[in-house]
View 1 (cartoon, rainbow, N blue to C red):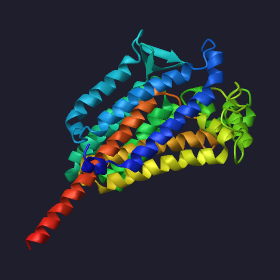
View 2 (tube, rainbow, N blue to C red):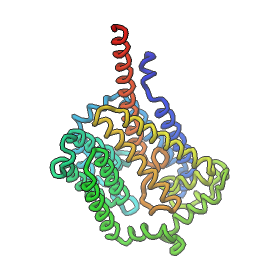
View 3 (tube, one colour):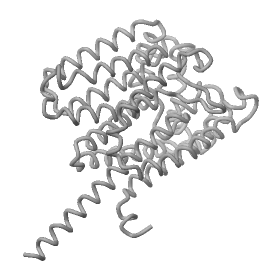
View 4 (cartoon, rainbow, N blue to C red):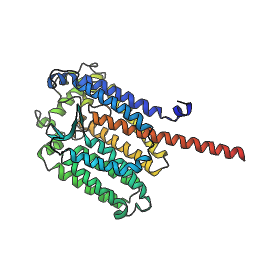
Length: 384
């Protein structure tokens, strides 16, 4: 490995990503071992063993993707989107789809439960970046420029809602809207798309009683403290118990079967309880650094596809963080969206690390292009 290769890597992005992922492994074990004893035949290491297995796969994926030229995704985009759609269909095939807690969102392969919708998130970002980067000349035309990819988006939204998974489906709609905006679409088109997206969300949100409960219980969880409001109330207790400095690593009370599934969507509540406000700040600052680096990478990329791809990844991670933190603190409805790099969930960990690896690859391209430009300018200056 030569010096220039090391210099090309975005070390701030890489280091903070793996610091947060390592912290996530620690907190998954701390928050899950009591739950695992109760739900996994007395094995306290049930969840952490699987998360470590996924982490190992994710590290290999990160290293491969970081060195895989991001421009190749343009050619692979049709294959990626077809595979993404097929994976969503496979979930509904009897014998392949795995039902957990009343939802069929997983495909079991050996000891691993794969959640196709996580792969679809990055697949859609690649597809939208590829299509809209090629439509820049007529992006101001709705029928020709903006609408065609939205047909695929609508199809994906419908397949994910069949699982059902309103949170993931909504996040994909929001990322799509933001990518259309950054593609340069006209405001009247954006307003129309926003109205359609909001209508779809309302229709599907009101189509099932449990979704209505989720959307309304966060406003007053104490109205139904033993059912729809239980998880949020227990989250409040965990956050209040942790206070400024926390109770100490491993010393959470709420993970003792009070807070349902504390290692997944509400792991931030356990972090707040055990490590206090400083633990929460570490998580939020680490995510902020990753997102800030992503914005810088996207804005510096001169290739329209690379720029849109970087921004799409940033939007997806940011929306997940906002949805998760909002749910844990009672500021937003509970959507079942995991906290990137921290919550238990192998598919989410694998895709998030792979997505950040794409950012790292785009960053390497930006650095090399800037260095070549400086060398060319230096040569021209010497010649003159």
